[in-house]
Image (cartoon, rainbow, N blue to C red):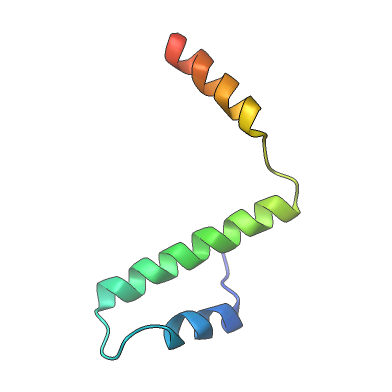
Length: 62
């Protein structure tokens, strides 16, 4: 997935100086996951809390 350049710039600007490369990678990972989630919401790929609870209950009772 692609990351919005503006969001990436804001993410980098919020990091301390110097910053550990592991922290950079973690924050980029989070940014990508958040943007993917927002894209899912815009595309209507969501389920209600009740549906999720039902799915989990069925899975745990099996």
